[in-house]
Amino acid sequence: MLTELAQQCGEALQQRGLQVTTAESCTGGGIAEAITRIAGSSAWFGQGWVTYSNAAKSSQLGVAPELIEAHGAVSEAVVSAMAEGARARAGADWAIAVSGVAGPGGGSRDKPVGTVWLAWASQLGTQTTCRLFAGDRREIREQTVVLALTELIKSLCGSEVADPMP
Image (cartoon, rainbow, N blue to C red):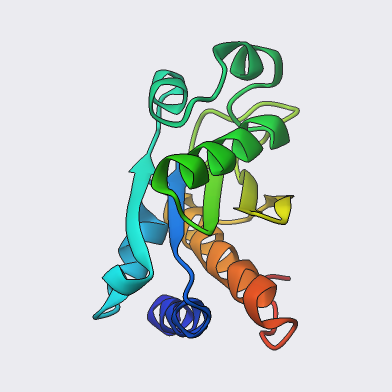
């Protein structure tokens, strides 16, 4: 499924002459890995960041430490800043960013295991969503990658893609 989504994403980007970049925390590069499964993906993907630590989010993507302190790394504010920072640094048309609690530990009452914030930034602005995924660490990360790619395809192509997430 990931390979097919990445292929669709690449075709949509390439047809429009657009580039995407990634800023990933809980997925650890999973979105970039799915994208680079596709031969020729360098035509529409130049780079991505794995910014697992808060310090990396700040130094690599320009996320203000005060923003992380105020909202936490797993938040709409931080994932938006990650996407916008990645897009600006890569000079890309689109950026996908994710930050979440993949587990098995690290959750809290407010942000239980499975909580993931995602953002998609373009020149039109930044859209975000928060999901609470079920499953183990691998499943949460995979669901995040699937949603990240699916929503980018929807943004590029309209509602032609069925949402694979319940």
